[in-house]
Image (tube, rainbow, N blue to C red; front, side, top):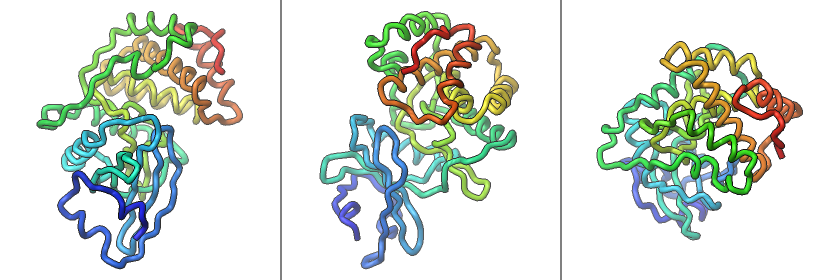
Length: 288
């Protein structure tokens, strides 16, 4: 078996963990597309496939909380990956082993968007008291989503006023980075992955971030369809969602300045169009 697995010191595992990798069984390990926080690998055996995530970058979330949360959500029917174990590798990086649940969404339509909205609403309605002794973190909104904003005073000026006017309420479970890359598809089954940013927060920002990402990387048409689903399902007003969309757009610009986010041929022009249309934003903001 590959050293990547052998040298992990497992801290918590599920009851059937020992049966996952048979003695002498061939195990193939393939790198997958990784995000900003961790390296990701697919582990294939004759019986099944798994995903191993290694937090080897600056981000150091408490993976014990993520493991327990996924276990609780999975057992209660929320569409998340099944967690098999978490531990530490030889470099003292936290690792998490979960089920392999398909590939990222490539195409969307109204039916899929409705399902994605329903899944996120289900997450937001998850009862925190069902988690028992698990403590989900609660962060300062600006410090967490706009870390280092003091270096970007043009954004900070808009941000502080928007945060004050938006009356942020941190009262439910949020994903923190709900977007199409974090939803896997396999034979019409959808699974939410990447819970690194899990926290008790404001569901409106969770929704707005997913809307802005669809607007930037898919199309305005589908973002408006997606938006209308949330307006129908909840008591949110168009004005409050527009405020939170402004916050989400500012976060994209902030992240793009410090980490150069992925871009399509029309990404910059699309973000400029958002700045121009949203009444809470300044279309003169520098995107780079």
